[in-house]
Length: 163
Image 1: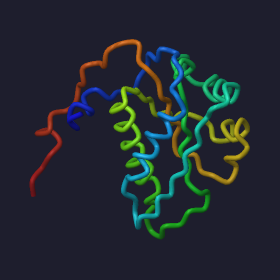
Image 2: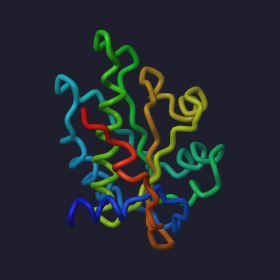
Image 3: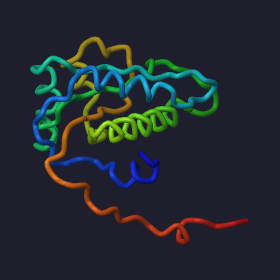
Image 4: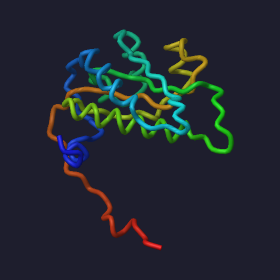
């Protein structure tokens, strides 16, 4: 699919159908996303696929109700004590790999929703294996029950200066 068409089709889904996303599709998406660039080619990300339904429900229950109908979840983490020097490039890297994930997903007909409003300690109490990780983001995947919304974005001329 043409890249601009992916941009227009991708959205933060708020109306998941409840249909599960096959784990192999998620693995394929992550395999494509791992090709994202990162500072110093450090690739500081780690992907945790939440397959257990009880764990999934425990993670989404404190969130908004639409999250409970997502078809899959990946938790994106980085090592807890990652040092880069003067800048925390791992946060930028997380953003880049997340963009790759969302575009790889929509290219396969899967919508996503990035969740940043969670409490680390609550998530780590549900998934103790994350105790030595910094949780960057939770990403929901699923099939959307409706068509993508029309995008409203600021015009390029209102956000560009040429110096």
